[in-house]
Image (tube, rainbow, N blue to C red):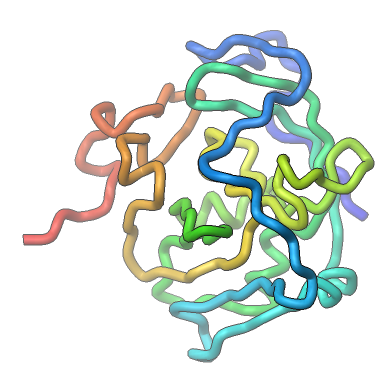
Length: 210
């Protein structure tokens, strides 16, 4: 079991500019908390896979996948930062090993319950700290915090890490996810204060059609 700490952890200036330190772990999400039905649940990897096939794991299948621990801070684009979260789960790179993307893949879309989505550059998804978490601080995730699976990408704002993860789509071009279509920044680097789409330059977002 690996144990990773995200860059900057323990540094005196660990709070990104414009953020404020909060204690505890506030619950924040859009829409209702989904009901978990283990017999119906699966995780799918689809889109531009190297084989052209869709890959799928049931909830029971997850137990056989490699695990790691990542200790990191969590930054919300609305301003709060909470620190020292211990995440335990499946490294995102494991999925790329088991279901390789085609060579032309540049981005992924993380899909969650109710059609929620978040787009990521492939380089963000393959970060050594990116994790599909099943546990937090030694305990299984609660339903409100994303049980059974939550994507954690500590170097980006929290909206890039969907709760209730259900799928990873490999993409050969970028397109915006749920919050990105509603005015949030396409890249979401908290240290660059990339909160809202009006802050983007031409290199930050998907190419415009037409």
